[in-house]
Each structure stands twice: as structure tokens, then as C-alpha cells.
Image (tube, rainbow, N blue to C red; front, side, top):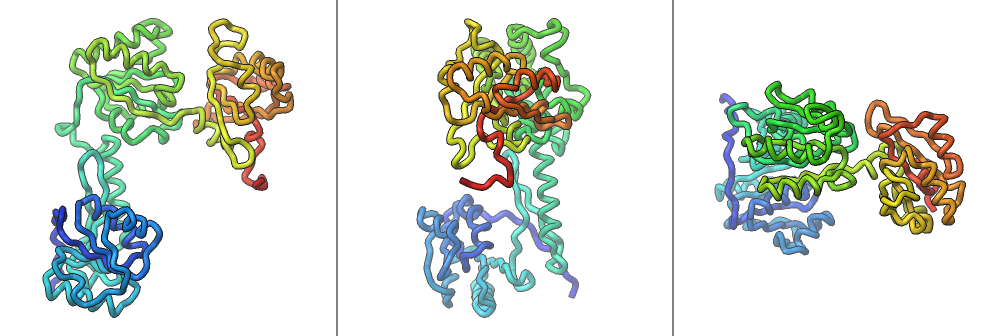
Length: 411
């Protein structure tokens, strides 16, 4: 007899009985989707993994703490058989067949009446991938296809041009520390949907090359608004393009609200009546140290970390940082935009009690191909910066965590 492919269908299980036999890893993977579908889930198993047990404790599923027994599938619309007892699996499968209950078997797909596809979601779309037959099914293959499709939908590369989502307004997108792979999935998708991108110098520049030819890219540091685009000019550009009905992405480095003046742009847009979506980004204050092998916190070494701006010196009247308080902290101090002022910062910290031998690491161009790490102490950092020609952008980490390595013994 010729083998026919499976017929794909979406089950609507809200309020309908689903029976799951077995509480191991298969159940742990499948139960969240069944719960999300609104199914009335009955779990039958003597034991379960801690995660499955937590679902029962939370009232998300009903748990009968015993092995399978004839009649357990009564009233079920769908069954997942995933025990380690072959005889029980066969008996449950036979009961499902007798009562016309769609049944998935984790141990023997050939004996099942349904197969579970590899699924993923993106922006309200569910992708389900099935092979054409039970013979030679390779779950890694179907999972790889699913992942490729979901990734394409998420970053916008798989959306047909005539179906392209286009929402007028502004999206304030944190691009992360520099590596284009570290932008969020949502940020990347919004970039793919944009008509106009206004980009900072510290944003992930490599992503701009992926934009379609029709997308207008405006460098926020260059013409047409002057060599260094003032914040007011940036605000005006955002408003003007959005008012023309365009979808605008303001691509910023790191996170828009961590020394990124993001709220100033949100306020200007709100005053102009322009809708704005804020997409958080990975801040360089924690990601760049991590990329250089430095944990900003570590058990027994640092229970806190503080992020400060170093764009003005400690003795500058414009500085809002309480530097004497910073010197008293026992945890990690992360300084952004402080390369030019690190000498004054180190002097001030030492003057207010920080030990001169406190370790310091400067991570230049973090997460990019040009990343380099330069180590020093508070006493030597000013001279080290000059000798090593450290240039912005660089994240400065001050504290004992600088000395923590993969081989450091745990206190």
C-alpha cells in the first residue's frame, strides 16, 4: 500500500480534555503549548520532573499520580503518550484508536494517529513543519527548517514585499553594543520594515548594509543637518519623516535609555503627537565587560554594580555623579564615555578612599572584531590609556571583578 503524507491541521483545544501520559522531558516540552492553547490537561503519571510538578502545583494542569489505567482517555480529544513503559504505551494507543482520540506517541511514531510538528511563532504567526512520512523522520531536520522560517519572519527577511508590515510612526530601537547579532529580534524586524533609519555612530553599522535600496539612511552625526547632528535636529528629522507617513527607526547604540537621550526623543515625539515604540537594547555597561570575560557581579567578590557617565570630569560643575560615594562602594563601578576623563576620575576615587591598586579594565570597541582589553590599576590607568592609545568607545570597569577568571577559585 502506498504511504500517504500526513494531513496538516490546527487543533482548537480551548476547554477540551487533553490527556498526557508520562511526566518526563517530553511532557515538559509539550505541556506549555497545550496550556497556552487553553486545553483542559489531565496528566497521568506516578512521577514528574520538577518543572512539570510546578505546573500542577500552579493549577495549570490536573495531575493523577499513578500509572496509566484503561479508561483514562475517556472524553479526551487529544492524547500525548510519553511514558517509559512500552506495554502501557501500546495499551493507551489502542484505547485512543478505539475511541477515535487523536494520539501522539513519543516512542513509536508509526503507531501514532497524529504527529507533533516542529513549531515556532513570530508576530502572531505559527509555523509548523512536518515531514511527509513517518519513515526516516529526523526531528533535527524539521527543527532546522522551522528555525530558519521563524528567523526570517522575525527579522523581516522572509516577508513578501506586498505583505510587508508598514506602520507609520517612530520606533526607538536599542541596537546593542556593536555586534549586529546582539540586536533584539524585534529591533531587527523593525529595521526590515522601515522606510527611514536615523542611525547613531555607535549603533550596529553592519545592519545598515542589509536594508533594501529604497530605505533612506540618515547618519545622525553627518549632513544634511551639520557635521554633528544636534539633538534638536535629530528630533525634527524624526518628526518630519513620521508626519510624512513613513515608518521611521531611530537606531541607537546600547539601550536608548542608558545615557542615550532616548527619553528626550520620546518627549519631542509625544509633543508632536507622533506615536513611538521603544525597543530596549542590550546595554554596553554589562555586555561589553561580559564579552571581555569580566562579570560585573560575582559571588563573594561583588554584590552590586553601579553605572556612571564619565563624559564630564568629577570637578566639572555639570557633573551629577557623587564621586565620593562611588569611592566608598565595595562593588563594581562601570564608567561609560570616560576614556578622556579617566585620569581625573581615578584621582578623585583615590582621594576619597579607593585603593590605588584597585584593578581597572578598559574594553575598547567591545563585541566587535576590533575589541581589545587593556588592564591597569587606578594608580596607573591614566598613563596606561596614553601608552596604549585607548580611544573611545570604551567601557571602563573598576573593581575586584576585573581579576576574576574562569580558573578563579570560588570563595
